[in-house]
Structures are given as structure tokens and as C-alpha cells.
Length: 237
Image (tube, rainbow, N blue to C red):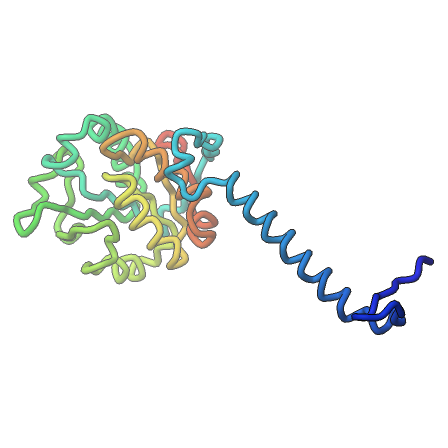
């Protein structure tokens, strides 16, 4: 093995290897720090600083998997949220969901499923303001409320508990609002959440896409594990 030697200051003598080790370790440590700093700098130069720099290159993930769903009518609730003339009526994508919501509503009523509605539009929000009167709420089935999380400021949780509800089907507009807001609230309270994508709508297709992905895989584990994406035609009572 090659012997390490150090030259003493002002002399031609050499020092024993053990006397050189502290100095050599310091040199190697300094070289390692320098090399690490260079690697970090190189890595930083090749990675964008934030999402806006990568915005145009982002690719959509694979389509979420839709599943057939069979629910127990006695422990299932259908939530119909914010489908008013003033907002849904101004959104073509929302108007297109109304036949699906109507069909699901009728099947749920026939099976004896609990139905609950949220109405928006301020202090004057009434069932008469819903976009389609053929599935308007009955007395005691609705709450006047704003915001995406319909547990806030309503007795929704008390009504669900009183009926022994374990599963909730969510419909309404907007998908990224009430869909994520109330859907997440349900999932985090331990309810199973059924998300019929043809009964939820937004102002544009991108908002629906990211909302669907959030509920399927992009959101917190407590939400995605309790949520099932489907279509209204894939739900059986």
C-alpha cells in the first residue's frame, strides 16, 4: 500500500501518516462539499422553478376508471346541489346533465332513497328557482346555503345521521365546487361517496376534468379511498 507523507514546514523531513490524517480529512471534506454544491446547482438548472414554467408541457393522466355501483336504498342519500335557473341555466354543460339528474332522482325516489337539496341565490333562494321543477324538493328536504361545503351552515349532517346514511350520491354544479367541497366533506366523515360524472358539471370542461381526477386519485387519501366514480346509468338501487 502506498504510504502517505506530509512535508513539514521549513524542513525536508516528513511526518508520519497518522499526523497527516486530520489535514487530509479536512481537504477531502471540503472537496466533497464543493462537489455536492455543484451537483445541486446543476440539478436546479435543469428543473423548472414552478408549475407555470412546465404548464404547456403537462400531460393529462389516464382517464379515471368508472365502476358499476349497487347501493342499499335504506342507507343511501342522493344530494342534489345548486341546480338553479340562474347558474345552471347559464352553463350549457350543466343544462346537459339535467336529464341524467332527473333519471337518477326518479330511480332514487322509487327505491325510497333519502333526497336532499341545497339551493343558492341568497335570501330569496326557493325551490321554485330550480332549473327543473319535475324533481324539485319537497318540504323539509332542502337548505338555503352558499359555498362548496354543504355541511357548513346546514343540518345536513344531522339529517344523514338520523336516517342512518352510509353512502351519498352527489349531483350538482359546479363539480370543482360542490363536487369536491361536499364530496370531500362526506368522505372525510366516513361516508362512501358515489360520484356520477354525468350529473356533475362546471363552467368548462377543464374544471370538470381536474375535479374528477381529484376525487379519483389526485385528492387526499381519505377522500379518494372513499370515493367511486361512475355514471348515472351504472348505479343500481
